[in-house]
Image (cartoon, rainbow, N blue to C red):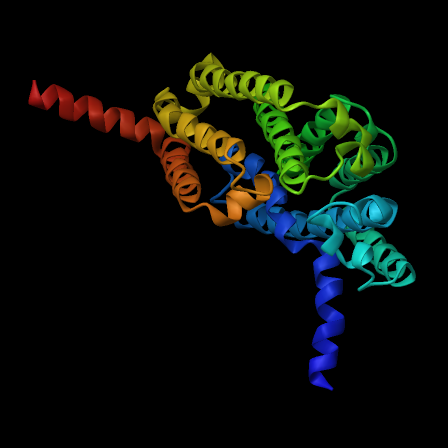
Length: 314
C-alpha cells in the first residue's frame, strides 16, 4: 500500500517541477543589495515570498504542461513529463492547479498587497507566454527575461527597498542570455534525437544553431558589461562605500563563460541543469555571493582597513 502511494505522489511532485524553484532565488536580490540581510523581519518576508512564488510558478508549469502535452509527446525528453506520459490525468492536474493558484495568490495578497500585484503580473505574463509569446521568435525569450525581472522586483517590494534600474537591467540581460541558452539546449536535444523542431514547437524551426550562438554571445557580453557598469556606478559606490564590487567581475565572467561552454557542448538540458549539477559553476556562484556579501555589508570598512594597512606598509 505504501509503495502504491509513493508511485502516485511522485508524478504529482514532478508535475510541480520543484527543481525549477531555484529560479525564484531572484526574490532575494533586493534583500542582499538593499542591505537588509541583518533585518530578521525582512529575511522572513523574503522566505515567505520565495515559498509563495514557488507555488505560483508551479501553477504556471502545470498550465504549460496541460497546454503542451501533445507537443511534449514528440519531444525526446519532455515526453516523460507526467501529463505527456499519462502518469497524471488532466483532471487531477487542473484540480492541483486551482489549489496552488488560490493558495499562492491569496497568500501573496495577504503577505503584502504590492507583492500580490507583482505576483499577479507574473502570473499573467506567464499565461501570455504559454498561449502566445512562446510561439513568437525573440518575444518568447524576452518574456522569459521579464519573468525573472518580476521575480526580482517582487523581492524588492517585499523588503521595502527602492527598485534600482540596475537591478532590472542586470537581471533582464542575464536572463536573456539564459533564455537563448535554453533554446540552444532544446535544439541540441532535438538534433541529437533526430526529432523535428517544427513538430515540437514552431519557433524552434526558426531558431538555428548559428543564430542562437550569435544571440547568446551578444547577450552574454551585454550582461557582463551591465554588471561592470553597475559596479562602478556612482550611486552603487556611494551606497556600498567602495567600488570593490568591480573586482568580482572575473568570477562573473567565468560563470557566464562556463555556462556558455556547457550549453555549446550539449552537456546540459538547460539553465536549471547547470545550476543544480555543474560543480565548477556552483563554486563560482558561491564564491561570488560570499564576496558580494562582504563588499555590500563591510565594503567601507574593508576599504579603510586596506588603506590603513597600505599606509602602514609604506
